[in-house]
Length: 293
Image (cartoon, rainbow, N blue to C red):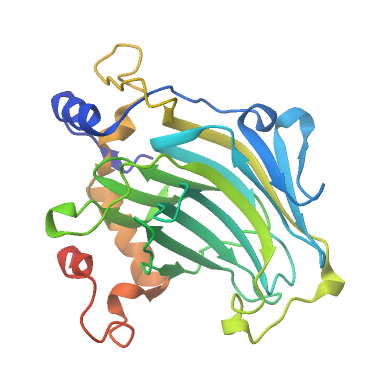
């Protein structure tokens, strides 16, 4: 079931002409073709003729990968199966990030926990090097038992985080009230599995049990319908017959069903929201918090 509806093609074309430099629709891909294994000295592996990617972590090192392409807006899907058992101290990160000191970033981070305790799904949005926009959730299923789809919709108006098609978070473009929004810097999709036992589980009180190593996380069914940055030379035109249907994500927004599902998740599964943390922001909550309420 879809939870999105679309604006007119006229509005889409105007937004695209302002913000987007290149459109190439990237369909469901092969890990050999779409990704580089960036670190881990053999701990990251592509298997099954490019259909499966596995990251592993031991006491010596974690591992990671990133896309060969950079993207400026897109709808990104990846299926993950997280580290099973006692995953305390580990973090599996899956995110978009640009280069430089004033980077943009859109984060999924999965914080491991003791056997039987739930994972924490940590989300954040950085713009121009500034984050501090954390929302955290429990999941309504065991993310280690099977693969589940984690999606990022990023267009000029909003960022929507979804799990198995259910929206869990929306971050709107509120530049009109002075809130920076990631819209100018192309980003690569990256993922890593690493040790963060100084903070990841119960604030660092629970350490990684290395007798359980190696820890492994698995990935499959990557799909990116996206604007691929290619020398900053091309132009996205959603009115093109070849691109019109595929580029609908450029104007997607939550419909009424999607809004209700989002509220359901946030009411039942959200465990931290920076917009409710008045102790953290004694001088006043960030401007977008008031605008969203």
